[in-house]
Structures are given as C-alpha cells and as structure tokens.
Image (cartoon, rainbow, N blue to C red; front, side):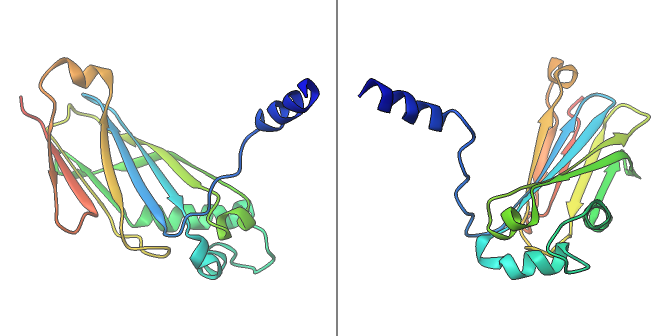
Amino acid sequence: MKWLCLVAAAGLSGPLAAHPHSSVDQQVHLAVGTDHAEVTIRIIPAATEGDLTREVLDQDQDGELDSAEARVFQDTVLAALEISWNTQPITLVDPQISAAPLERLEAGQGQIEITATLSVTAAMETVHLSMTYDGLGAEWLIQPYYFEDLQEGPLPRILRFEDSNRIELRSTH
C-alpha cells in the first residue's frame, strides 16, 4: 500500500494537463510605474476553435508553429495594440513571444504570451490603451497593474469603456 501511495504521489509531482478552454481567453496586462511601463498579452485559444487557431498561426500548414510564424503573429497582434503615454504614441521595446506547441493551442490547452517594455520619457499623467486584434476572438480583458513606485502616492484613476477593449489611466496628482 505504501508503494502505491508513493507511485501516485510521484505521478502528481509533474505538471498537470490544463483543462481545455471552451472559449478564447485574451488578456492585456499593463504594468505602469511613475516613468516606466510593460505590457503582457496572453491568449489561450478555445478548444472549440482548433481549426481557426491552426489557420491563424500555421501559415505554411506544416502542423508546427515555427519562430517565423510566431513572430508574424506577434507583429500582427502588436499592430492592433495602441498605447499612448501623456497623449503621445508609445514605442514598444524588445517584444518577445512564447507559445505552447500548436497541437496544445488547438486543443485549448496552451498559451501564447507576448511581452514588451514601453519606451517612456516622462512621468505618467495619462495612459490610454486599446486592443483591436480579433483574429481569434473579439473580447479582451485589459487589466492595469502598478509598480511599487507608483503605489507611494494616490493611484491613477481607471476609466473603462463599454466595448471592454480599451482603458485609460489618469494620474490623480
């Protein structure tokens, strides 16, 4: 009996398979500080949309998501992301993409993550973010986070819009 418990425990020590997502989960996390910011985009395709996921990601239809295809997807998603800092458009620095294998993405069990730093040169007064990418789904959860240096004073006011694909942060100083 003791042996059986050890075998069962060993089997659980590794990563467990994620449950299949029945709908696409798309999020933009915007982390802001007094004079710096980062963006993380997470997309978990839906298991029910496996064919669409393959069509969007696997451009050469070889059954693999290679680095060139991942970069094309990254550039497409980032082209649909608009961020302004104090009303000035922002340049994204060093965008990176990581993605689960295509078969896991098709099954709704994998994630795509795109990260970048925002090139800012002044203290934050307002930040506006909108996401219009709709290749895998139209709805986005946009969530701001604050670096510790921004938490020392009054936190920015968050304005959310009805379409849910955009937010604005306004300094309260």
